[in-house]
Image 1 (tube, helix red, strand yellow):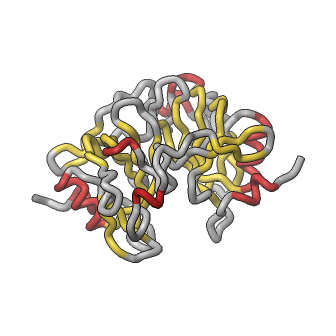
Image 2 (image 1 turned 45 degrees about the vertical axis):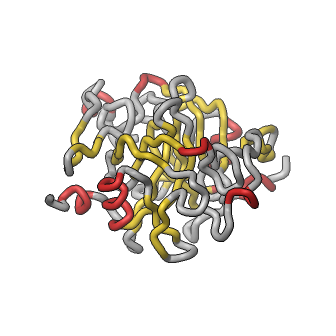
Length: 132
Length: 132
């Protein structure tokens, strides 16, 4: 199949694009991570989210350590072609490496960031090696 | 008031942070834009989204041209402190400079990006100068 759709994405100088994962059922924004060309291609082919870890400099299949895979029902691209959005079903209901459902658990209240989402599972019980 | 909350944000080397705007009512992801420190501070103070335009190199009060302001009900920060999320009420129901509700109107279908959201208003009728 043609790779025109991958060529349409405006990759950064490092060859990356930010990807937002949104819960397909209730719209909760779960996390933002980076993809390179291969990660986006694999995500589309496999229907499971694959990201690029900038810290570990490798492909990172979401859930490979935690079991918290993301089944992808839809892939979208924004008007500037420089942000990807995935609609996903989040296995285990936990996307964040802190054991919370969403990474966006800090809310600004009266000039400070307040944690407003509970830890659903102890990260030590989720990961044996690297958080994903 | 202390600016500790602004210092907690992990700004890029250019002093920016990406900000996702989400419809507060139904969870639709409307757009992603950049903020510098001043933009985020103003957004928090005024309760209206202010971004930083990288192309025009100036603060950009969303809706200043179009009237499509974003009233901000909540500001969140992710676990890495490097992505901001706003929950907003979108004036006019249009966030995208193409006249669509959301900037994420291209969906991947069988290896190509397909436009799946209608233009609600002709951009020429929205903007007299610069799109916002």
